[in-house]
Amino acid sequence: MIPHHVKDLGLAAAGKNRIEWADNYMPVLAIIRKRFAKEQPLKGHTLAACLHITTETANLLRTLQDGGAKVVACASNPLSTQDDVAASLVADYGISVFAIKGEDGKTYYSHILAALDARPNMTMDDGADTVVVLHKERRHQLKDIIGGTEETTTGVIRLKAMAADKKLAYPIIAVNDAMTKHMFDNRYGTGQSTLDGIIRATNVLIAGSTFVVAGYGWCGKGLAMRAAGMGAHVIVTEVDPLKALEAAMDGFSVMPMDQAAPIGDIFCTVTGDISVIAEKHFRAMKSGAIVSNSGHFNVEIDIHALERMSKSKRAIRAFVDEYVTRDNRKIFLLGEGRLINLASAEGHPAVVMDMSFANQALSAEYMVKNVKKLKPGCYSVPHEIDENIAALKLKAIGVKIDVLTAKQRKYLASWEEGT
Image (cartoon, rainbow, N blue to C red; front, side, top):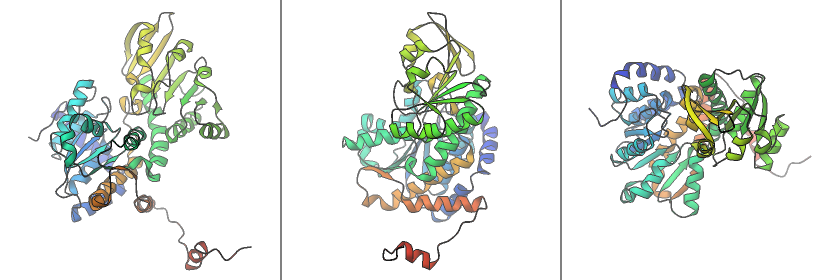
C-alpha cells in the first residue's frame, strides 16, 4: 500500500461514488484530463497538493496523475477533508493522501511534512501553508522546486507579501486571480456553499434575519446576494471605500462592525484579515448571535477573546459551540471559526470547481513548459488559459456566442475612424 494517513480505507467505496458524481458536473476538467492522458505534460514531475480533500479536488488530482505526475496530497484545512474521498483516492486511484477530518494542528502540519517527504518539485496550495513550511522548515528542499500554483485569496495575499519581501524562492501562479476562478468560484460557489454550511449546522431560518457579511470582495458579494435572495436583511461591513460604495449601490446596508454587532443575528466573515470580529463586537452582540467564517483561516474571528469572556462552552450541535458569556448571553460559534462551507457542508458545487481546477491543471502545465522563463514571484494566470477555460465551459453547457468579423477586428485595432 502506498504511504497514506486517512481515517478509514473502508470508506473508499462511498467516496468513489461521490467522486464519480462530481465528475458528471466537471466537463472542462474531463476534457483536459483526456488530453493530459494522451500528451503526458507532467511526466517526470512530483506534485505536492495541499488542498481541501473533496470530491472536486479528487477529480483534479486524477487529472494531474493522468497527465503523468506523481501526486501526493494533504489537507489545506483541518475540517475540510471528506474522509470517504481521502480513502478512495488511496484505495482506488493510488494517490498518497495525508488528511483526516477534524485533525488537530499538530497532525495537520505533520501531514504537510509527510507530503513534502515525497520530494516534490512542484507545489499546489490552497492558503500557502505548504509554501511557508518549505521556506521555514524544509529550506534544503527549495532547490528542487521548479514552481507552484495557489488556489485562494488568502494564499495569494501571503505569497505577494513574501515576494515583496524578496523571500519567495520560486515562481507561483495565482490561480485565484483568474477571472474564471474568482468571479465564479468565489461569488457563486462561496455564496451558495456558505449558506449551505450555516443552514446545515444550525437549521435556522435565513428569511427575516439580520445577516452581517464582513467583507465585500467576490466572496462577500456572492454571500450577500444569496442571503438577500433567501429573505435576509443584509448588512455589509467594509474597510475599502470602493467596495463599500458598491455594496450600498447594490442595495445593502453598509456600516462599521461596531454598529452591526448589536443588531446582527448571523455573522459571517469573508475578508482574509485578522480579528474582523473582535472582543468589543462579542460584548455588543445580543444573546443567540450566530458567528461564522468563510475566509480561509479562523483568525478572522478572535476566538481567544470569546473564550476569555465566557464562563462556559459546550458543543450543542455538530459544528456548533455554545459560549455563555459572564453576563449570561449565548453566542454560537460555527465550525470552530473555520471555513463553514467545508466544515459542515461539502464546499463549492462541482460545476464551479470545474473552472477553478481547470485553471490549476493548465497552470501546472504552463509552469512545466515555461519554468526557465519565470523568476521567483507571484504570477497571474495567462489570459489565453483563462479565455480557453471560459470557451470550454460555454461549449459544455451548450451556449454559443458571436464571433468578430474581419471588419470588426480591423475597426477595434484602428484609430482613424471617428464620428
